[in-house]
Every structure is written in C-alpha cells, then in structure tokens.
Image (cartoon, rainbow, N blue to C red):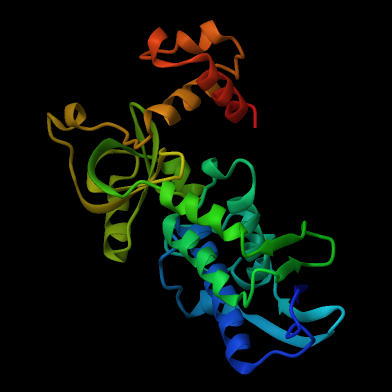
Length: 313
C-alpha cells in the first residue's frame, strides 16, 4: 500500500532532499512506527522488536518527486500486517484484528492523530511513544513548513506544523512518573486469549506487562488463579493506570489484598472530571457537587463551567 509524505513551505521543499535530512526523516518515521506497533502488541512501546517484527515494519521509499510550487513528495510503500505478522507466534499473544488491518505508516498517522485530537488527555499512548512523536519535530527546518501524511483517501490525512508539537509536549508532561505498587488479583484467561495479560482485581481489570520473557513464560502457571504482583505502575495522560510492569510475583499472602489496590495518579481536577463523566455527563451543578468527596466550597461556578466544557468535548 502506498502512502505520501508531503513537505512544503520553504524554498528547499522543491522535490529534492539532502542526504542528512532524508536520513533523519526516515529514521524518525520508522521509530514511531516501531514503538506504535510494540505498544499495540505488548502494551509498552519501548521494546526492541525481534527479527520477524522488524521485517513486518519494512517501509520502502518508492520515489521522491515535486517542485518549488508543489513541495516535496515522498511515496512510501508498506505491506499490510495481515500479510506479515498474522502467522507469527508472539509469545502467548496474538495480534488483534485492528492491528492486522494496519501498516507501519498507518500506525504513524494514527499516533499523530491520537496525540493531537481534542480528547488527547484520554489518549492511549505511553511516554516513550510520545517522546518519539516529539522527536519528529527535528525534521522541520522552519516555522513555515507543513508536513502532510496520507494514504490517498483510505485514512484521514494528518497535517503537522511545528506548533503542533507544543501540544504533544504538554501531553507527554502530563503523564505521571511511574511508581512502585503491589496488586493482587486473578490472572485472567479470557484477556490473554484477546492479546492482553492482566489481573482481575476487586477494583477492576489491571493490565500487566513484563520485559523479561522468563517472567511472561512462568507467570502463566497462575492462569485462572490468584497472584500478587509487585512492580512499577505506568500511567496515561489523564492519570489513570495504563499498566503495571511486573518485577516480582508470588502466591498471595494473607495480607496482600489489604495492601493491594488498583493504582491511580489522577489529580483532584482529573478525578472530578472522571467521576462527572461516569455520571453520564450530567450538566447539573448540584449533581456535580454531589460527587463523593467534592465539597460545596471546593468549586466555583466559573470552574464548573470550564469542567463542563471538558466533559462534553
């Protein structure tokens, strides 16, 4: 499948690309595709793909054309993942149907769209992937340049300016730092069959992940049983838990449930918004003020109106 990257806005955008700039563009684009695929497959983007996944991530430069008037066009050829990873044995996981319908370049476009949309605080992106998106800014040689990425109609075009990276940077800054946690629950068999590894806890489902393949291979002995996991909790931009990185695991002790709870790093403001959305987007001031833990004098009418705007976005 063919994709276009179009660059315009400067005299240098004339259908020619200097070697160093071409190298930077291809390297940064490939890095985004790689991290986005690993995030889709493993739940964490900063993982080195094996040789089979590296082949599936192939992005071939088909042509460079353009003019001083039309800018520079790069045509990229990618193979659909349904042809490259469908038959691979990815440890105990299987790629989802969503991933199989995509290509490496489609992942790049989707990642930028997710980071830049109006609901970006709820975006399902992690810190390493956002840092990779931010690194793409180095491809701009001026504030006037515009980058377009598209696949000729099948996927909505993404338009990038240098100013857009300020929003991505703010989003990356919102992600809380990881912290040490203990979670206890039942290792869920159904979730594994759907490509996830996680615990069903008393507070809900928790995605868990391990960089150590030995941990992944051995922890499946607890499938359908209770297990206690100690590790680092990683969060989304809205402060909600993304996943817990497993460092140690064991049979549950008598006090594990007492000390275990589903981690969260939401600010008071984010908690109010989250709970308000859970009340089916009620627009009543009295309903919002009745949320547990929200006292009448903790919110002004102006703050309430601002929250309503965020809730209804």
